[in-house]
Image (cartoon, rainbow, N blue to C red):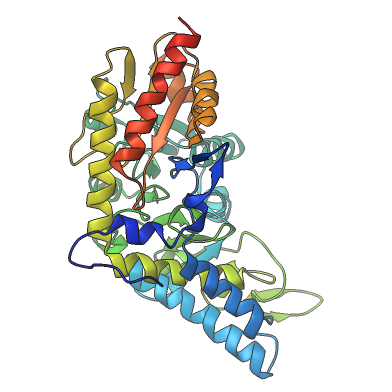
Length: 414
């Protein structure tokens, strides 16, 4: 690992740990601004996963040989490390899944199908990712529960007066994104959780865009469930995390079944194992858990507060540069404490997909589409938007390249 100046954020030293950022296409160096979809992976994470495969690759909890013991310890301790990172009480409250989407589905099926009934209300927000919206929509259809949405105001923030109308004694669960992957809005998740608890409802917070770039304490938020993914926080793909309060997880039945999650099996019945293993059947993501721990170590060495400050500073600069262009429409709140590190926008007269293609000609990686928030885009009155999203290794110079590339689009579509 290269040495960092820990007194100030040395972005150039950080970038040295990402060889992919040195890649060139047609002589142009990659400008990677698609971090809300997937962040890049630093060398220490890749090395940790390679070490697992080279030195102690074995299945866990199934063997008494040395390799299996080493792998089992690493996998179990990964739960402890994640619990420490997010402020959970212990490994029993940390379930490893494939991604945030599977975490949403786990709660929806293991809790929602059993607990929801006609007359209950599931409260979402208009800025929900499809992982939440579609999942609870389907559970509502199966159980007869009503699914309703807290409005987003013209500034891109939640209408909290509307939230207080919807979150009443009929509400059974409130599911909300911590940070919108389209608007960049940082939602008042503690307030939403408090509202839910005042009326006897549970809360589920989608932290996929929050945990990677800001300190998150699930105990402080008091969420009943909280989910995020490794691949958005400098970690590997294929692993997500579901935090759940222990008393709730103990009451819930498993979502998936198989080996490794049982206590006893007979031909007549099966009893479940202890937490967190009862929700992790089959061979789990051992290498990915090792990589996730390495990513957490890497992030904490830099400091989550500093990562947040850097990302928000780059996003603010991008917002201001784009806003000054005059023919660019930006979505979401103005820069401030309730806006995270991304900017979604449209260039007048140019479809987002065309603009993204032109950006790619400049080797600038951004994303176009509805960003898995199609209903939100319907409310915004646009079919798609272009999203530039930032992380700890991005620079102002990369933002300047993004803005400069807009001129090509203007000329092509003049």
